[in-house]
Image (cartoon, rainbow, N blue to C red; front, side):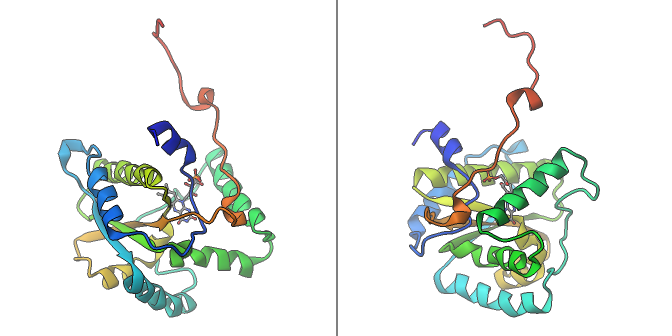
Length: 225
Ligand SMILES: Cc1cc2nc3c(=O)[nH]c(=O)nc-3n(C[C@H](O)[C@H](O)[C@H](O)COP(=O)(O)O)c2cc1C
């Protein structure tokens, strides 16, 4: 698969087949992804890859925790600005609508919306999950490097026939996850990434998010060819 195909076919997959991902493939993906650039070559990423019984144990830990705290434990960093202006706010709203429409859940049906949200904490059925964390002392520059590392992981996954979903939802259960992973206190959980083989028959995987046109976000000047 070439890079263009990897970019074009990646999407946030929210239903996976129960087919295990071999450890050696996850190791290859992470080894290659570590070629991602980082300012000063600091390589600020830390990954915990989980599968099998270990993943099931985490999910089992989360279930009663979610019953106790449906909105989570609070996040350690802001995921969105408090007052996000349009068109950004509208785009965020639209993707939520698309998700629920695809599975036939009405906007007013809060319990059904919550059940879908809760699927985040099962990695949407993926047989493997990655947790990405970063040193607390790191600043914006390193967080951006983390983003490019995660994107590289997601594009490499495509070359192995795998799909992914980056999940900041996990940050809202950072205490439970950090304790489970024995994260040292100087490390902060950023997100989870579901990893596995897409269930192409699942309605939730049957649509794609739109993008703005090139003209909406890019200006060009000085080109001669
Ligand atoms: C850092 C990050 C965190 C995200 N967190 C979640 C999440 O917690 N749950 C979820 O279902 N999707 C999550 N997404 C997926 C976005 O909704 C998705 O990337 C966006 O709507 C564009 O769709 P696409 O990835 O299918 O192209 C996240 C994406 C990113 C980049």
